[in-house]
Image (cartoon, rainbow, N blue to C red; front, top):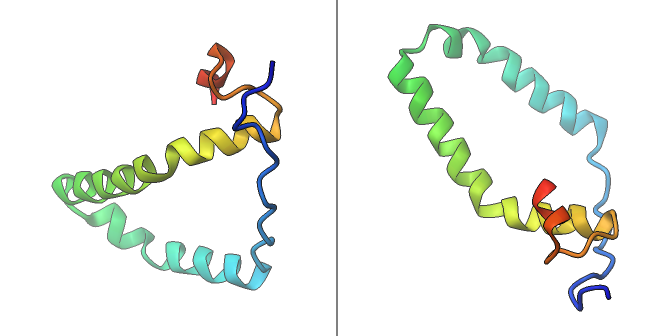
Length: 80
């Protein structure tokens, strides 16, 4: 029996290629800074990224389950 939460999520608009290109340019422009940064700074940046991801990861997983028609309360949902 499907979960009551199993609904089709709204489809987000695709990110324009120009926006993606700008973000990739930004990453590339900071690559040397990242490579030369102290390990303590890299750890701080990665911890900040992890914190941001943890705030949205449950929503990501639930949306993936909905898209794949997986009951979010099932054991299979843990794969997401």
